Length: 183
Image (tube, rainbow, N blue to C red; front, side):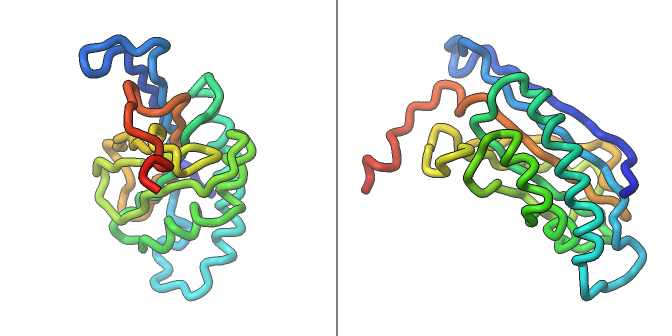
């Protein structure tokens, strides 16, 4: 696995809707810009060897970093794969939609739900939203949120941006009724 760079973002919201948020609502994102392991090979029928080589290492690298950046217990989480223009969306999907990647984050977050994801092919600097859901109950509406990020110089055509995102709480000032009120 060839990593060009790792980027960490944190955001602390102190005010929402004109009202204070106490404690501030914190989110964190860690992104790795990596060389696409299938770059220059044309169509590759069997992605499994590359997935086995890269996905576990990425999960092991990124999961503790995003938890550390958050600095609090993870209540909501998500993942991303943004593939450069010379790759396939399947390249990014293969790396993040495997337990070999996601289970590192699930264990670090003490989570049981599936990780929501964004995956797409895009040029460097593309803005993308990473969806977040509650770590143990995907029906908890207050934790359905997204965080917007971008890498100004990535992914290059032969790269993939792989990311994990975490939130220490639900949306600031969340006040939707629980899903159970509609059933």
